[in-house]
Length: 308
Length: 295
Image 1 (tube, rainbow over the protein chains, first blue to last red):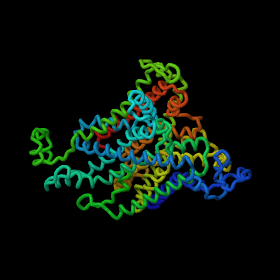
Image 2 (cartoon, chains in turn red, yellow):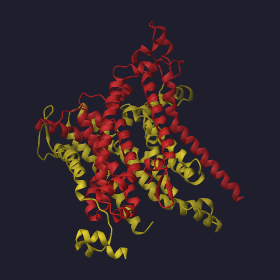
Image 3 (tube, rainbow over the protein chains, first blue to last red):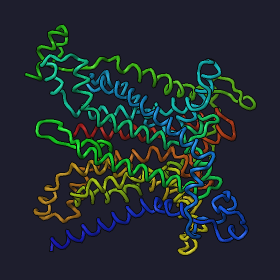
Image 4 (cartoon, helix red, strand yellow):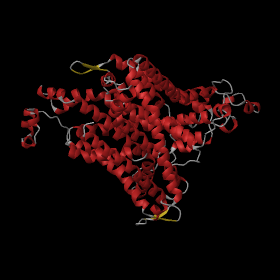
């Protein structure tokens, strides 16, 4: 009797999980599928050109239903005069944000992890504050700050790539610090102690013992920071000046009309990301790291998810 | 022995001698200086200017005089803006509860019933994050579009209503909730459940008295983790609410984009943070209490 009941509970949970996964992935499948959607029949009837994917957003008709298959949106997206430059700008800012945030976060994490709680508390409070304040508030506050700073100090950059970067590093440095510190605390100090006992100096110990073991957390922090920055709309929307990032271009497209070319580019990017993850997972599986006596772990997934 | 060496008296011993006796690798405190400086200039700086702006007086278009003008704050308490604050907090609360209701069983399922595919299931929860937030919200808009299949064939026409905003909130924040709750369920000792059922507890009673209690801190943390960004949400109400169902974040944005009433936008921002701080402080109080009682 009990055995049968447990089986049904398990089935119930599995069914629910399937429904939730379908809910999570349905929009993504829709995005990929509708990258291949033709303009509506009504729009095509009045079109006499050769490339149906050259139709502008306001003339492609209803594209929220399936009109037929075409793959020309992929080349239309890759040749769009605004999309690719905006993606390049976003990639550049995200890479810079990842490096700066990770360096700031690493330095702070090293010092904070072994600091007395009483000394650490104010810094911790500041870090949590940067995470708790809603992004829209940080965005408008940064906007007025940047404008005032520019008006009073001419060396300060005007609104653009630089100000987007400056604003994003605040949040990302906090995330990076928390991830790296969690790993650093979890590592313990026995191996460092051994290195010192064997006559290694502080810098050599850091370079040869501490840093390599922190690497999974550092990589995870940099990747997360890159992702957050690349996908960020709200802060850049207020501090961009005339610079267009990919999310800003996407947002105006979503609000004021878009073509499946946007879906096509998003699908390409998801494909590249998935491929990168699979490749990374394979590499990490091959280079399993020995963390402690008898403890073997693959750095990566769980560290990257912040579960450690 | 090790404990004795950590007592304050040892701090008086010169550094070299201390290293010999007990090892406590420390990195110099000045390593915090770069980020401290960064936060002070680029986080506390903007926040200070925000406060100054919220107390300034608007003089014509785009120029203002600093002072101690509280009229912006009084304007917030007018019924129009109170309604928006109420709506934002209510929607975020409902969105959080829905996220918990949808996400908890999934995290439970992963922790309790999966072994080989546990990491894969977890990875699949994160995959949606690799597609732009805007693209995912746009894809939801396609699904909910009045010309789409859902509206035409199933008669579910909810785009630009609060229901669409609710779906968008749950959709976008679900992974963010599942991860921490999974982490706390993962630490569960399932033999406790076996013991309870062996002693005659009904499965649901065992769940309520053991699993739920042990994972409640994780649920509260995960809940707060999605509640906070939901109250500051800007994109979802704009795209899925179509301007019919604005959150405080949208009104703040409008003051800086269209209305150009920066003092009022600043006051609204401070108001939003004040409303949020109530929840954060309540959380901190609960969390420290939990710690004291060793839960």
